[in-house]
Image 1: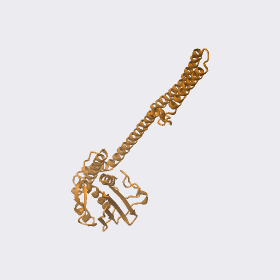
Image 2 (image 1 turned 30 degrees about the vertical axis):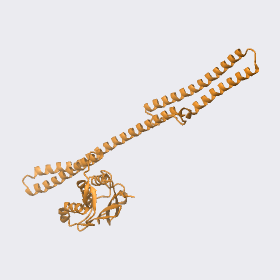
Image 3 (image 1 turned 180 degrees about the horizontal axis):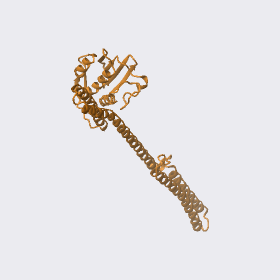
Length: 345
């Protein structure tokens, strides 16, 4: 019986049973001895038995009342702000099971409160980072606008600062677009329309996106992989992730450098690599490259906003893939993407 799982209830039942057994034994002995005034003696024994049972019940209910009072005190302490307040429930039984569930509920509420605090801090930090990222291009636009107003008679200066203004506007647009995409990823509002896509065709599209820039900067983008490999993915979003990786490589390579995009498939995994022979990543930064708005104190890149790689990571993980980076200063960087294929056993 579940009710007897509680040691206090079990002890109470044993005590009452012992009282009844002693009373019954005493009555039997008195009857066997044909004692005079047997009715009076039985009545006195019954009083003693009733008194003992009342004492045992009073002890049991006093203990239960103390348990409930302690539970109420701990709950009041938690409500008052003591996050470490918990009800002691080390025994078995339905009451202690209920108290254990109350502890579980308190732990869940505490975890939710901590998560909300972290979310608020993250939102605060993000707003600060966005303000910082927007401050630079907006200040530059303000300067360029002032120069343009003072150089109305100089077509060459107007053309030069108009181009610079366009670059800053593009920078703001990229920042805002990436923020919107990451926000949608976090909110889970993006519905991926996955279809079986040819990986070689996807890579060719990525290469075409940067064909003009790579030609201007005299950098080579090469593709190498099995043309028959396919992947179940959302075409547009996966290309977005790969574009960000290739853009990162172009941002950190010099004239004459190269970017190699490779892919290979084994029975259980598809591996995609984006490698360059650029400046590399400082060892101190390797564990932070996928953090939002992270800017290395060793990087000479003044244009990036620190959202491309985090966005790529979010997209790849949403496709149940993983991404990691290997890099050596002065040698180059390799981003490795892996998609695991389910195997039938």
